[in-house]
Image (cartoon, rainbow, N blue to C red):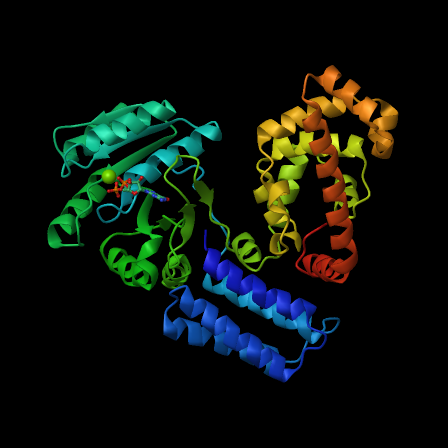
Length: 439
Ligand SMILES: Nc1nc2c(ncn2[C@@H]2O[C@H](COP(=O)(O)OP(=O)(O)O)[C@@H](O)[C@H]2O)c(=O)[nH]1
Ligand SMILES: [Mg+2]
């Protein structure tokens, strides 16, 4: 998601953090890079210029706040300005009962309704789905099928208005009623009239506009048009995966004052996130999504001192096993490393990242078959011990060897990272602190 923008921005941050000295000229170069990166992500030229102008002004003309170096000041300004452009604080839909979805044909409304309903269910709420799209053949069947998948009740009437009216009555005891509406190829008068009438019947507390990210900067015009017509209370940007224009869509929509509330990042029902501009920008900048990481770590009872131990290459197989267990609880390794500040932009060995969950499980069994001494001091593991461990765990000897190689490779790699990139990691840690993250 947002690979181009993310790569461009995190490279820029990396340069900023690692260059030996930062002066006016270096800041100008960074501003040029920032501009190029934003334009490549289809951010509107006027907006890009405005953003770069703001950053330049704050970096070079304003006094650097006490306690910050120019380097930190520049990064903080870039961070703040991006957050500013990408929207306000996140807002959830808790307590909103009647939710109406609008958007053009194919934007992802129906899919997103199912995603939102699933999200509600996870929070222990009971959603119900009503189909008011009788324009497109098979639209009710699509929503009904999705409703079945998430185990939510579904209703469709004879026409859009009867759907709305009777659906409201039928599901009045549910926590959230979500209404799907018809899209057209363009926001013509017919669609406008239909949406207006539906709005009068439903009296929704929340009207969510769905916009696909591949519209790029055009998203701005579309959200302005819908705004004029309906009382949009929020926007969901879908298809953030697989387009280089997502940055443009996100910035374009946010600057209209529309609140982006969620983003869709794939076709599956799980590919859905609450949009949080601050987190989003730190991820884009490669600062790592520390909040999320820490939350996940807490859930998985992951101990910070253990993370530290691993990052610094001071760990044995006992720790390795605990890591594997915690990692398994936290999710795919590739995602986790992206969230660790500094690590996100380093190239971790592919083999390490692509360790399948299955492999992790086997490794765990192998380690369980080792003695305490072997776990604490893997260097003692000889060929005959390998044989015994293989027999004990029911895994082939080659896999025991593979695990040992993997372990020492990881250890070596982490040590190198701790040594060579120590400065960089230190810098990130400090920056993270400045941004209010506890590490
Ligand atoms: N890659 C990707 N595809 C999506 C996403 N959201 C929806 N789609 C796909 O977009 C197409 C249109 O979606 P649909 O919900 O029927 O759009 P609607 O006409 O607005 O109701 C379908 O093929 C969906 O699978 C997303 O976040 N990522
Ligand atoms: Mg639809």
